[in-house]
Image (cartoon, rainbow, N blue to C red; front, side, top):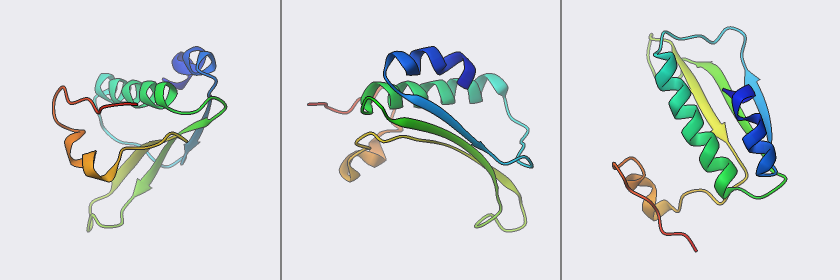
Length: 100
């Protein structure tokens, strides 16, 4: 996904970085994970500042899950973020925040 998104990130003035733990793997739907990453990367490139670094990370995460092991996948950027008052709504279908 990062290789595919690199030209779009470059056009937006962003650099991509990967922080992947070698022992982090999960059974998941590759198309669904790809779509989630593309959505997050697109938002990061669109709303973040030029010159930013957008980092995709993956790591094993056992903390807080009892005996079950999980993998944590994240996208981190240098954009303004979601205001606290709107965070609960971002998972509503078709919800779009107002932008200045």
